[in-house]
Image (tube, rainbow, N blue to C red; front, side, top):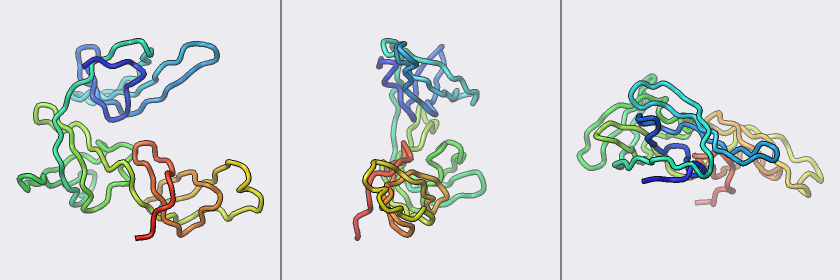
Length: 189
């Protein structure tokens, strides 16, 4: 399936230069008065080598269709992660670096989708949103809430995110695992 160069996103698998590539990062850039482009970081699925091409918005890129299976994360063992297939209950391992920047959000027992191509696992999709507790945040400064400013906060998994100034340490928030950004306060359950 052909997609526009501007539609290439993190986690997609594309065919480019006669190879299969996993999109590790992407950023839409608009330099000055020039046309915007999508700066992507790709990882060759077979060799693991990386490439950082730019795709124009009118450029057509072949997106590879993948098979997906639902699995549960069991535990980490060094730099490998152990998963269980929810259909046949078989356990298998994957390298931790396959998750990229979303790795700290993986929790024991979490249900994930693992995308495969011809039986080989390519990417792990975490739930879009997860609840995390803030362990460290700057105190509220009077008058700061009037402007749309954000302050840094450190989550229980060590990840640093920007949150609104009224969010204190100890609060549980919802974080988007693909962008690593604050979404909202978590609802009390």
